[in-house]
Length: 197
Image (cartoon, rainbow, N blue to C red; front, side):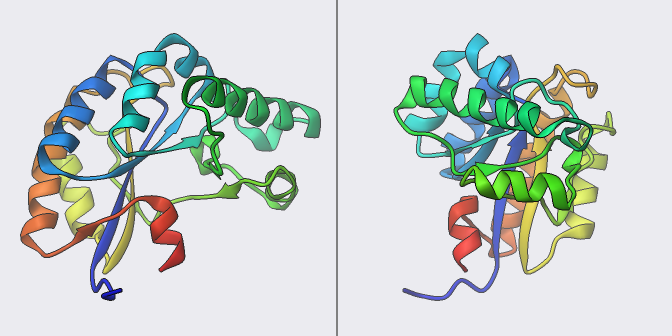
């Protein structure tokens, strides 16, 4: 297989939500695969979006059931957050996620060990679009462009329920980010592929 020189994984957290529909349309139009770290309670609300994410070839990861800071939870609470989300996703698409992203990126040795025991791989990021903070699409694009590396794992958000408000600016910035990356010869891959390179 030809070695990839420059590659990027687009990842979306906190969804699904009504904004996921627009993000999927943009990804489809651009033939770009992505990885969605979904919240179990949101997956239950939007089963059709989970099925669409899966059927369009994107990867679904686990982002807990209710988006807590897992470092503040007991072992049993952490297991419940992860397993209930995996069960919900498996019910919808027939397979259970093997990837996990801790809300807020909050993880420590104790939680890492529990996650490992559950057989899921913890995934963070090396480029933060800061779309959870910025209300300007241009500012989001600039965060990505200024922090981009040869091999980048970019975090964005398609969910609107966990403190970062509406995702209009993410939807607007996404097309420009994809065009920039394409113009600069980046290959788009999913997180499982990223982790094997």
